[in-house]
Length: 242
Ligand SMILES: [Zn+2]
Image (spheres, rainbow, N blue to C red):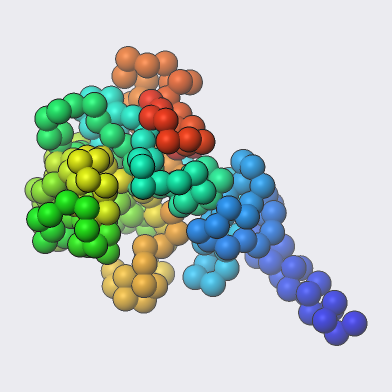
C-alpha cells in the first residue's frame, strides 16, 4: 500500500508539474534512448527528470538557416538509426551536409553572445569532446544554438553576433567521420538555470529542444518537402526539425 501510495503521489506531482497545456506528458524515459512512442520525444525536462512529450512546452524559436545554399540532413555513417540523432530519440540534433566542394560559411542562427572553441586541428578525433571546433550562441531568452565540427571559427568568446553573422566554416573536426564534412546543429534550452558555467554544473549541454528555421520558404524547395525525416542515413533535404 505504501509503495502504491508513493507511486501515485509521484505521478500526481509530475502531472501537476507538467500541465497538459505544455505538451502531452506521456511518462518518464531515459534521455539518449528510444523509449518514447512514435511522434513523442524524450526531453531532459530537468537535470534528473526525462519525460516523453509530444511537443516542447514553449513556443518554438525561429532561427536563421545556417548556410547560404541548401543542405541535406545526413546523420552520417557514424549515426546508426537509434542514436541520439534520430527522431525516435532526442530528435533535435541534426547533421547538415552541404553538397558543395568548397568550405561553406556557417551563419549564426540567432542574435546574442558567443562561446567559441577553436583548438582542434585534425579531423575525426576526440577534440572538443568529439564536437571539434564549435560555437554556441547563448540567447537572452535562455536558448543555446550549437554549431559543431567547424573547420575554423571566426568569432571569439564574448562576441555578440547577429543572425546571419559568419561564425565559422563547415568542417570535420571532432568525431565527424573521415572526410565527412558536415555541420552538427542542435538547439538547447535552459542554460541560465546553471549559469554560463553550465558545462561544469551539468557536465553537458542542457536538453535539446525543437526549433523552426526561418526563411526556408525562400529556398527553391517547397516547405512541405523540407523536413529532415531521419529514419535512415539517406540524406534528406532539410529545413526544419519540427
Ligand atoms: Zn551531429
